[in-house]
Image (cartoon, rainbow, N blue to C red; front, side, top):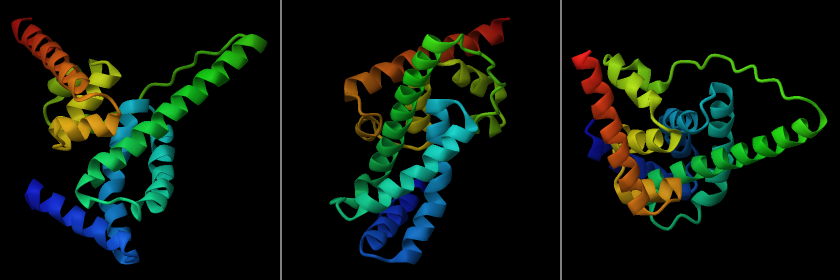
Length: 186
């Protein structure tokens, strides 16, 4: 199925789910759960936290789907909910760390990260370079190239201006080009 056909099918499922079709909602959830998990993982960097966020997002989607006027914006809307949940989790964790630091010295046992969704591809060098990007650039690159969202949709999903998305993509491309060129020269 082409990307355009997939988008149209997702719009149909979202419209049907908004109208109360439970089967359509189930199919929408089945199709979108991996994408929402991948986005949460790119933002948080931890599999369990990303899995929790991707599950929690569905409660927000259920509540808000009836108020979604244009089902064409479902992808950006769903990714924005994930971004908001991830940001909330980051803020909550920062507060918790600050409290713990006041009472005791914080343990810094960072477990090794599980392989990212992008590392499934055959081009490991590219995915290593993508993994080395800052979190914001990594999210923009993934939404643009892997999820085929427009700059405007990414802007809505990440809750940043379109110019910021363009800048993140520009810097990410430069870093990727430099990293990949450096490996070829070395």
